[in-house]
Image (tube, rainbow, N blue to C red; front, side, top):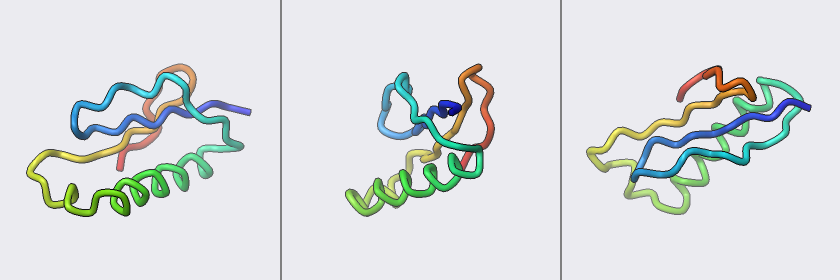
Length: 68
């Protein structure tokens, strides 16, 4: 199974060096939405910070597949 890496650009978080094995890029999209949802659930006030907040998903080669 391919490995996908979820890099959140917020609060100087370190890059994802572990990743997650998922069946497809479609599954990676769903996981990206879940990840952002968990962040909002855990810290809803962070949504209103002035800092940019995004998540980029890349594959094993380092190619960015999409950004939310």
